[in-house]
Length: 344
Picture 1: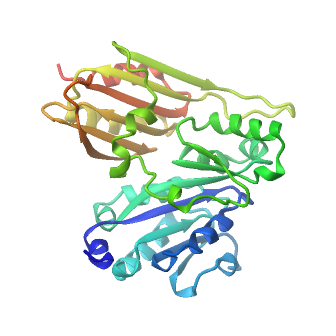
Picture 2: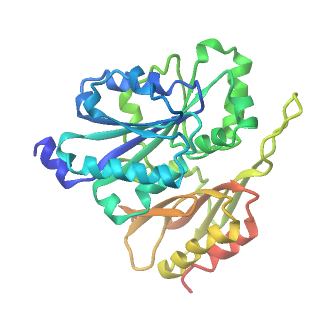
């Protein structure tokens, strides 16, 4: 089957490149666009400011670059993104992948939500992964001062710790610890000048078919018998008398039994309201009633997406596994609520 036929039948994967100011996003983008298949990539840039200059820094012919003016990617700018996607839909046969580079001041959540929010969008486009670049020298300060930097790390599927050639061992250790306060699940790759194997940047979403079989490892459960609750709470204070938002934590829950999908769906839709927008990420693998396949889901704030995964193995323990990342998580509410979704 030709590339064009495959593209017409399957959603185009979308890679979101984000990171705070000066982290190396454009450098990484240029490395990707220097690859042998870059002529099949479309690039969407979100610019901040009245004068558009970022596209001048990108090594690619103008025809494949689409710009969104205004750097915040809020709801009004999301309309601009949908408009660009609509135009790309008409040229779907021309592209194998879309790359979105946000401004350093952007919150990536509205972009991710765009690809989850509409069946119309999901039919033609699939969010393949969020790559967050981090400046090894400045990330600790940025996480204190900029909520956007925190959101960029929280939502990442892959974190590139860049400029490590300029940082000493203590600075790199501090950067990794700061990252782990907000995301303990995403792998961290150290780079200089954003130099990396391009193949490692693609097909990184939790829901990509090639990764469904590996979700148990990414969820990092012990596999012992019985129910388990794992918590990791972080409140980090720095020498210069600043602290991160308190109580950003991850909470993991592992339950035996089968899940009632209707009950679970109702509960998941209630969670954002109950947590006041402070439940940042959810992901997990579920054992559903009367189903021989695993069910894998993830959520970015209030927007959820799920797919059936591999069949359960005959000799494995079928368990429901969840990971939650958020601020001031009500662990008792999460524990009791999900237990109530078990089949009676």
